[in-house]
Image (cartoon, rainbow, N blue to C red; front, side, top):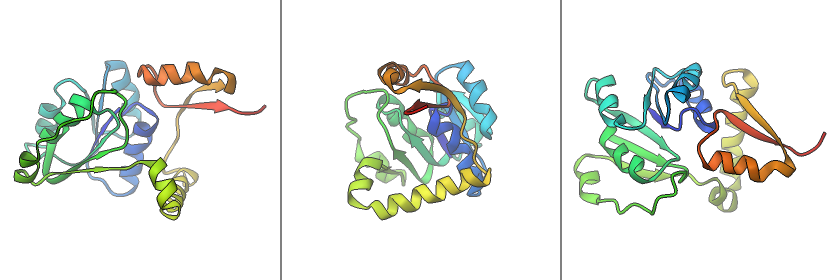
Length: 184
């Protein structure tokens, strides 16, 4: 498994979730060395800088690639992700942090290399299948409650400071989980 944005709120939990579910190897990508150092605390086998990550994945997996890539980044990172997939591997999209135009994905290389693209959108799921979302949330929060997954809160903001917090998140300048205080 490979997780893009391994030092972010989801990324810092994803390696722990993967391990608790039996993943044999978990890799991550980040934008800076400082973020790589931070992400390494959460159970990643290796954390790579995002530039050139497909080659790093191939080297780490002895040329096999990974079965799953979690991608909240988009753009060129998403397209390059297909190069790091093992046969029958899939890229799971759950965000578009890079704010690039939508990809025009060539289908023949996906088909010819036995690869897949899937998505997970919590907003859509909450509207169309709230029971499934509830099940997913209970399972994940159960792992947090048991201690199998640790949520690393690295920043707290007053609700009035939400725009500032959003700007930092959008700029990719945060690590871990940022939370808003809604009461004292």
